[in-house]
Image (cartoon, rainbow, N blue to C red; front, side):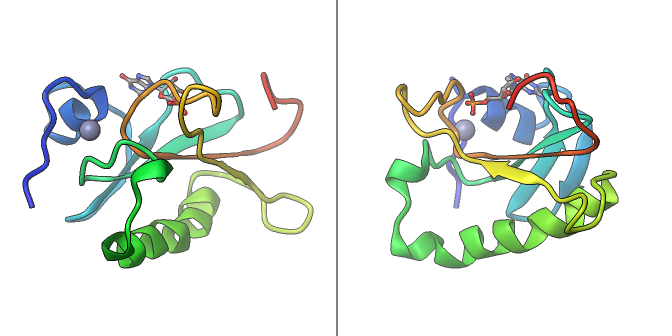
Length: 120
Ligand code: 5GP
Ligand code: ZN
């Protein structure tokens, strides 16, 4: 499934054309540190498939989205989030202009670590 969108900055990162600080990669998912972190741990978890946002998800994405959610807690701990319940993490998925989405390639923000955070 080739869905590379050359106008999409996250597709450029997935293709290796723009560098990132990688957290995790497999054949269908990539995670990398946010360039402007709000929290001590702040990485983005995204499908390699170019899906513009949560507004475009479809039944065929069920397994992929499930895999992303299953990975989030594991990667959060690996990246230094403290264990639940004293620690934990926040998962955010901004969707559309009113949802605060700036990059039009579906991604989960995974944030955690000791507070205070810069935002949120
Ligand atoms: P959104 O507002 O779309 O939910 O979040 C986009 C996020 O992507 C922002 O937190 C922003 O800092 C991050 N970001 C934008 N461009 C880049 C980039 O080139 N590299 C990395 N690592 N993060 C980026
Ligand atoms: Zn893309």
